[in-house]
Amino acid sequence: MTSPRRDQTKSREYSSHLLIWLAVLCACLIFVFHFSFGAGSENLITDSYCYVAVSQGELVRVPYNTRILQPFIASSVSFFTRLSRIGSFELLTPVELLASLLLMVSILRRRRATTRWQAAIVLAFGSSLAVTFGYTPVLVDPLALLLVCLMIAALDRGYVVFALIFACLAALTKEYCVLLGIIWGYSAYRRGHARLAIAAALLPGLALLGSALTLPAEQDSGFHGWQGFLRAMLGYHGSLLKFRGAAAYTEILYMWSWCVLWPIILLGAAVLLFQPLRGRVGEEDRFGFAVMLAAVPFLLLGDWGRAMLVVVPFACAVAASHPLARSNRTALLLGAGGLSTALARPFHGAATPPRVFTLVMIFISTAASALLAFIIIRSGMSHRLAGAFRIQKPIQESPVELQ
Image (tube, rainbow, N blue to C red; front, side, top):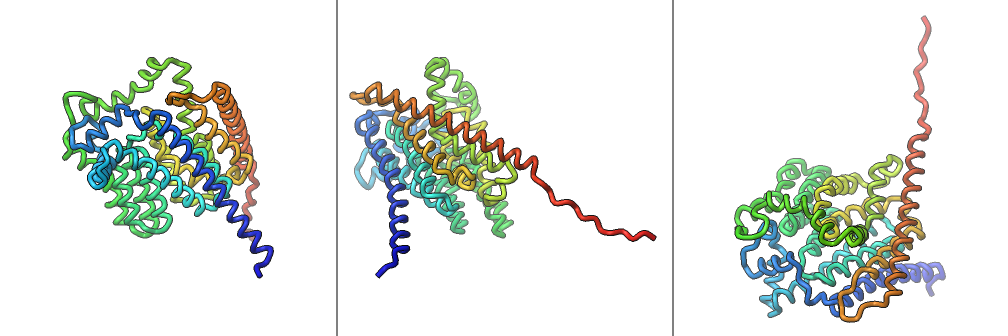
């Protein structure tokens, strides 16, 4: 016979796993709903056309000519399964998103995050991913997110070589993923591979440089090289504001902020900023998140609702050590805010949700955001005061004999 305590422990473990799987199931249902009934299977944006063209071996403009990994995989899937190129992208995207969420659960579990915190992140992040890529599934961002999660998971388990491979592949998915080489190099250096770290950390950048030099870009249209691409990024938000209007532009920024889990990024930044919290997280996690934070000003220039997705796994790894990550109230607000924001986003199907439902979701999202902002600011002020008024041990002076 099993003891009551053992039965209670098994029941608690079953309940915790069930909570996480319910969050995963909710994200999957939202993806299916937007893809099947929200015109996601028919929606192609400018980026999508470029990626499909790359998978067909056609010339495209900078920077799409170097983002070759996902189109190559889609082309291979199309060859072996007889699916169309677009169908291959649409098959890969949900698989990559699901794998990313499960890897993030593993990453959080290794950092001893509570089950409710894991479920809240999966629910909030997964819901946003489901809406974004359920409506626009032909993109490379899900693969970039997956490769980042794979690199972190590989480093957690000491598989340094595999982590380097994932970093190089990520650089061939999105160009700013070359930063993963710096993060990998620091991790390898701390593990005693100093010479290897310096040389191999450059490999993601060299992979991107090699693809840019060897793969021709279309010159008749587009940005006319990398300089034109950078100029287009600098004017992206101005053009978006002019095209959408101030009200719609503000709504887009708010939706993007939940796509990249703004509360998690703030909590991670607080851990790096305040000394009492800094010692609770591993040095490699701190360095990785700091590197990605340094890239945020560049990522904000474009569609940062997708570009900053690669920052989220690093932020989650650091924020798991924040005291608020142990709070059930914070976890509830995080999950409710992410889910309600995703459900309040526009639905592009023939039958739209009732207006009352959308208004209720907007209210829940706004309330959750306001409460989370208040809690995070109050926590930051308390930790700042704790650091300022921390009592230091007095320095004991050695006795001096008087002659």
